[in-house]
Amino acid sequence: MALRHVAVGVDGSLVAVRALDWAAEEAVRRGTALRVVYAVADRDEAAPILASAAARVHERHPGLPLETRAVEDGAVQALARESESAALTVVGTRGFGGVSGLLAGSVSWRLTAHVHGPLVVARGDHPCDEGRDVLLGLESDADEAAAAYAFQDAARRGARLRVLHSATHRHTTPELPSLVAATSPGQDRQARTDRAEEAVPRFSIGRLREEYPTVEVDSRTVRTGPAHALLADTREAGVVVIGTRRRAGRLGPPLGPVAHVLLHHSHCPVVLVPAS
Image (cartoon, rainbow, N blue to C red; front, side):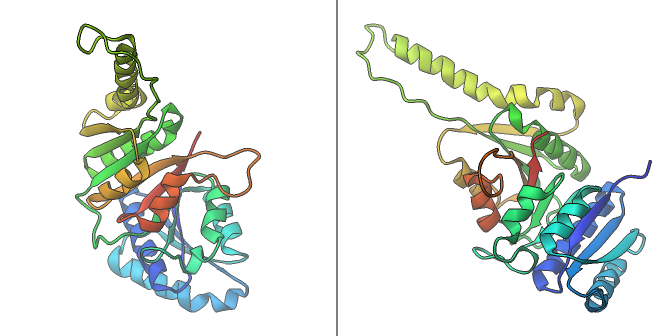
């Protein structure tokens, strides 16, 4: 069975060129084909943009299997449909703050709600992602799919995997101190809670450590500000991976505060992996 391709959306903008370059390098890394998609109202308008994209890919990666496709549809609908058969879907976004091109307005948020499989938002300020760590934001065992993606990506890149686990700090009711230092019931309960929370990343990624023994893993736990802790770490990362979950009964895409911060301010590409 043929390996699934990497799909990338283009629209003629400079930010789409970054997404195209990133997607092409990822396809080479995976040993898969690249499919370049342009969603337009009239297919005839797509020819110059797709031809330019193809020429750029062939120049940089002469042996990479490439397919271009013009789709008469909206960007969200076209890319969501393409993602059904793709191993990875890639789109671009411009610098800090606003979004542009394929991700203009609410398109980016709507796409995260409808995409099938991992979605990469190719952003950041690194000229090259090679040689940098893979960063994983882990909240719980529900992020197993994101963890699996991060391990696979680190193995493909020959990179170190850094895991940042966010633990919710629980309020402890103040109590009178024990006569024996650091042994009050409340302190003992808090110590057990802290140890359990810090162990979550080890249990979550224990099986994956065995499956990918060559991947070097460095993990740490933060109890406050996980979004900004991850954001700070993206300065030195090649890519950051986080999980997303569908929010039944709520309007809008399945994006929490961590994803919101990263999509607008990350210094490296962001990978959103839907929960299994």
